[in-house]
Every structure is written in structure tokens, then in C-alpha cells.
Amino acid sequence: MKINLRKSIAIGASLALTAGLSLVGNVAAQAAPLTPTAAQLAAWKGKEITYYFYQDSAAELDTTKKQIADFEKLTGAKVKLDVIPFTSLDTQLQARIAGGNTPDVARLNNPGFYHNVALPLEQYLGRNYVKEFLKGSTTQVTHPTTKKLVGVPYDLTINGPFINLDLFEKAGVPVPTSWTWPELIATAKKVQAANKSEYAFAIDKSGHRVSTAMSHMGAYMVDSKQRNVLRTSPFRAEKAIKMITDLYVADLAPRDLWIGTGTRYSSPTAVFLSGQLPVFFSGNWNVAGLSEGASAAKFRFAAVPNPSGLNGGGWPGGKFLMAFSASKTPDLAAFFVRFLANTEQMEEMCKAAFWMPTRGDLSESGINYPKRASDMKVFLADSAKTPSAAYGIQSVPTLTGPIYNKLRDLMTDVMAGKMTVKELVQTQITFIDQQLATLKK
Image 1: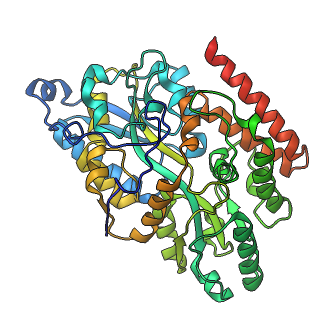
Image 2 (image 1 turned 180 degrees about the vertical axis):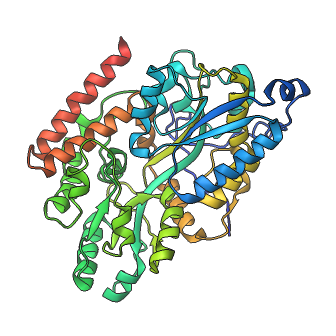
Image 3 (image 1 turned 90 degrees about the horizontal axis):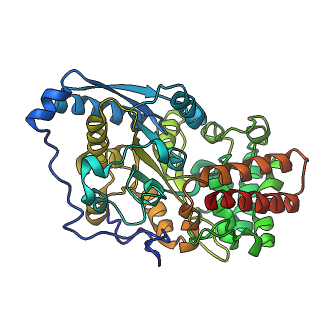
């Protein structure tokens, strides 16, 4: 099934401040031919670059290895693939940079951490290269001072829930086509009780994921003008956060995955794949991994729409490619970024790993997902329903990681009985103020 993303991806009101995503013109969206010059081939022959990479699924890794082989054949260069666990992605990379062992290229979740050590891509790929991507998708890889492109948006993501279809069927509960958070929680408890499953609900240990529920309640942390807006809706934020932390405190969700993992990200994917979880809140990047795991575990799952409240839709995110200025072959590193993000390679990855593309031409033409197309249709529909306010935090790309992580860690303290939800929100407001103040120095 081919899905036209132009009709599905949210178009916000303010493109300059990433209040949404929009398509560029057809001419600008066309990729230039990927043909190295004779001089480049001579210079690159036998050279090696390092690609610092993490994966959300085996499909991503397999496709990446295949594309690296294609790149090596095209250029005569070699690519050393360093596969890193997502849980230590930034700590290991920051240590490598500090120790003078910077990779040439990296796949990143928080590109704002690395703006000042990134390669200025326009110098190697041209000023018009940015126009190949959806406007708004490049905000987090645009240097805040120089306004130059220092990375590439590699894929778009949208948060949302999955359900175990077999557990729902055994409980006699229909697959939801729309619901509210109270209905989601009541349904999860009903399915758990009917199946005597270990848990009712779980969500990735991530402030980014929890921001989805906050958005549904009408609460946000930073707006498109780089202002702390959490103080304008603290009660809404408290409602969303308490709703989730109460499930963990009551052991209706796997509390050990939060409290027992310190200040690290963790995912209940394994719990869902064990068949002990009716509702799992994650995002479209997990379709590939769940498909692989559910097939082995012999159960059926499906993506279902996000619950709604004051707002509907999901919460936006994405992954990025960045080349580093410390590279000894910066032109080769930049060309590798361009190769991975080119039309052919991105389309191949989208089909294999259920990605949503960042390129204008692919968003225009649509992606023909060979399987799980119904799941991707759900995520794309929720993307179109996502409010423009959800993109506000992307106006501070150097701060998104710290702000999300602080929320995550404060939620851990609530689950451990160290603070109340009200105290959490007030602490988060103060922290955001402190973070925003660093932008003015």
C-alpha cells in the first residue's frame, strides 16, 4: 500500500520556528546525481571513515550494512560501522569527542549537543541542499548562531500506542478506533484482568514519550518563541503525569524499568513481546522491531490511534545524521551523509524499517510500505492531527535532551515516593527557566 505523506504530515503555522512541517517545491526537492568525480574517486580510494550508529531494529542494521556496501562500491572508500546501544549513545560519543576519537559521521537523537563540533554541510553539499528536505525538519540541525546546516534530518517519528490484538480478542474488547486517556486506562485494566497478564500498560522511560500525554491534556514545556510555557498550565501537566505515575506506583505498569535503571532510558518492548502487556506506548520506529519479535513470539499486534483530550495526535521526533569537523576526510564524510539521506537509500530504509521520510520528494510521492501499512497509516494520521504547539520545544535544539531527561528523572523520583507530582512540575518549571537562561549568555 502506497501512502501519500503529503496529505498525512502535519503542516504547522510557523515554518521558520518549526511549528510544523511543509513540503518544499518539486524542483528544489530533487536530489542531485550521486556520482563522484574522478578526482574524488582518486582521493577517496582506500580511505576509511567511521560511522557511529545505533539501531531501533535489526531491519535498520541490515539495511545500513547493505547501504554501506553500496557506498564502498561507489566510492572505493571503506566505512567502519560502530554499533552503539541507544542507552549510552550520547555519553559514549561525548567521551570520544573529549578524548580526540571523534567518529566521522554519527546517527543522533540529540543533535543539539554537537552543533559546535559538526561539519558545516553547506560547504561541501551546497547552499541548496537543505531544500531537499521538509521545511521545519532541519531546525534541530541548523546551527543557532551561524544558521548553517550542520546535519541532516534522517527520519521523522511520531509517538503512539500499540496493542496486543490476541489479548484484546480473548478479553472480548474491540480494537479502539478512538479513545480518551481514561478510556485507554480502563480498557487496559479490563484486558489485563481478563487475561491475568502481568501488567496493563507501559510507556518508554522517556520525557519525550510522556510529553505526548501532556500535549493531550494541553500542557507544553517550551513554545516556538523559546519561552517556558509549563508555568501557564501546571495543573494540566500534573494531571497527565499523575495519570501515568499512578499506574506504575500501583504496579499496573513495570515500575522496575523506571526505578531500577537509574537515569538511563529504558523500554518495555521485551515486556510487550512476552505477551504480558495489553497496551504499550512507544512510536512508529518500533514497528520493525515489534514485527520481528511478535512473529517469533507468535502473537498479533497493531498500532492504534493516540488517545485524545484537549488535543489529539502524537508527539513529533526524529533521528539525524551529522558529520564532524574533526574528520580527516571531511568531503568523504559529507558525501556519506548525502548518500544515506538520498532518495534511493531513504526510500529503501523507509520500506525496510517503517520510517517516515524527511525528504520532500519522498513525502510528495509517498512510500509503498510492503507490509504493516495499516500501522503506518495510523501513525501518519496522528501526525496530521498533532498540534503545532508540540513542535515548540524544537526551537531550542540544544536543550531538548536535558529538558526531556529531567522530566523522566523527576518521574522516577515520584514513583519512588521521593516527591509529589506537584513538586515535580514546579521543579521542572525552575529547571526549564535555568536552561533557557543559558541561551542568553
